[in-house]
Length: 322
Image (cartoon, rainbow, N blue to C red; front, side, top):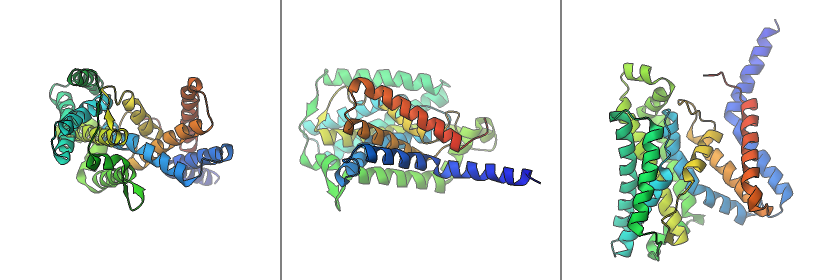
């Protein structure tokens, strides 16, 4: 008799945790920071958090698709650097802004496509392929720039990093568009279903007719495209393309996806969780700055808080082991 309500409680707890657990943790973090700093909940600061989230958020959107297939993309930071360096160099040589932007996006997508082709055709594990691309793309960036930054971009280009649309900063608008388009792609097309099937069981997906190679190449291409787009927003804001730009961005993106509830084994997670994960990480960064936490301790505190958030999320949203 008592087994029925107990089972129902567990089901309700799991359902609640999966749908609202991360949002609850995010709200608790915001409440804590609001109590600790009277500057946190100001409109200017909240807008700044969203603006800062845009870069990692866009990269994380592409990373989500990759991780959903059971893969990993360690090259996004270096792909970002090489793509924006090419775009920046073209602008400095007098090419139209539109052509330069398209060249940067095509470079990012092309490098991602190469990752996907090596994984599918050469049967090399994603970790090895993208680690190699990380090194190669960074080396090409340093060679191309000779270690020197490229600065001074046209105002028309800088608008994507500093402009506003109806009072909303353009980076925030672009991030929202990326997640809306990604949501439609992932949840309203057959390709999204294929991505989840591929991550859940690659063998079964192949046997049921899922175009595994095509889907794999597609998700890595999208990941490279997102990295290039985020990089363009970043250099437009800074008015500078440094050869070291993007260092460590792959770790931030992976962290946002994992904090958002995705599983490295694939087939579990989604873009809504990734967006919340990216917001949580950037909110934490912002809060640590407002509280004047020493840079020597900032990474330690950030790591501890993220680990505690993950433990709390797992406690709220228990899952069966895969």
